[in-house]
Length: 197
Image (cartoon, rainbow, N blue to C red):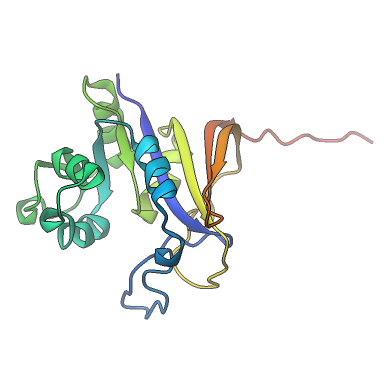
């Protein structure tokens, strides 16, 4: 049985968007100044040696414009080798493989993928999927690379209305540029306590 890990680069105010879109996001590449060799090694370790990817269609399209032609190095090679499970209504238009389209019922499709044998699954980017996975108890681990800046605008990690829930702290490390990689394990919804009179 596979585990599913969410790995996100995130600002202090919760933004995970990195590239321009139809809404005119003004801070493309905001994490670039914080990249260091130590940070690259920490992220590589978080991804592990082999994995498959779960991606939304927008993230898949963005990545397929860059990673297929990226020079050979450990992270690029692992991304290229990973099977990309893509949530899309147009699987016939996928071209960066190996790939497989995820059916219209995302929750059931991810449950099926997790029940199979194979490498663990990693979701990165794909902001529309994170809340769905957490809400349905499908994420086994969350790794946040938190950058020391505020963006004030852009797509955020959690959608409005994501159910309240708890996460156990697993561990953290800080890179020389101040990026904190923190790992959490989702443990369930917060139980509201009613106080009697």
